[in-house]
Image 1 (tube, helix red, strand yellow):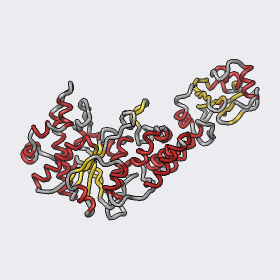
Image 2 (spheres, rainbow, N blue to C red):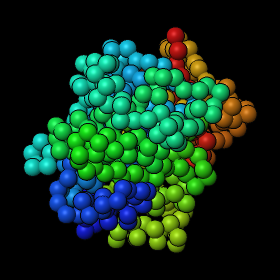
Image 3 (cartoon, rainbow, N blue to C red):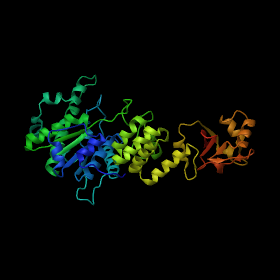
Image 4 (spheres, one colour):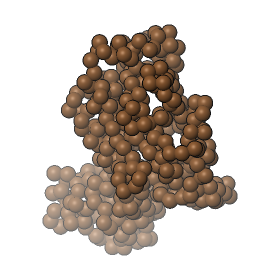
Length: 430
């Protein structure tokens, strides 16, 4: 990702539409010198998802403007769960699951933030380091006394749960105190004076700033970003197929690329500002392409390329683009069976026994009929003669061709195509 930076961090957030609210004096503090700021990440899975990209990008901008970013992974609070935006309490994590999740998240964050080699290197901390050793009596005496129940109940995240059928457990109710304590610890240990997060985190963040004022007589700030939804009101990152993960084992680079490529025209310019480092000139040019030549989808292609490269690297991007081209008749060479199963997951498919392909092989005309691509052997021969039949992206002109096991990619998959876009996937079994 490349691009120019705005004059300062606050202007960067404003231009990109990433600034929702901030406490009084935050603007001046951010423009008068280097600050240290943190954002928390939820370790409930071993991978972050596309919804996590917004806070990641905010930390990236923070570092590019000379400030020090801290990525706090909630190894302690993750065992409890934040009630913000939740309708019911989450399942508690075991120590083993939590550690596996933390390792996965660390690896993903390192793709975006510079943790060494610069004088404002990013930091990664785990709040389990200071929360797990806490003594309950000491915590209630030293921290809990600064928060009235009235203050906590008035916060939107708690208020919503109190009126729900599920209610809120004492465990989750305590989350605000623990997050406030995190902010105070980071203030003491790293001089961290800013906490950033989604607009639904305002209550938790300002509680931390208030704790720092009460206990340490310090000044700390909150900065929040808007929650991302599509123009149709759907929560960003949610699809019919489920969550879009940053881990290639959970969401393949091809499906990840396709997610961004399918961004509606109404959302793509906003997402270019949110999720890439492209500057105003580049974004303006792409915005014009949406208005003047929307059928080319150049803005969507740029968005898909930039984000896929950032998350998965150049090699995975090249493979994802090749896989996307395959859908429009591109070359299959170099793609494995797993790639093709992923690419063609939504096209009609059937199975053929390996024994049927052994020996003399299976007549192609028979396969075209059995898969339903043609209604008769006569029509199948006519399709081949007209040049409209493809096997593994290769045009076939031999009407009597028989397919052997060697035709199957990795001995598992045969891709049939009729015309330009009508596909059928044959899986070899047995």
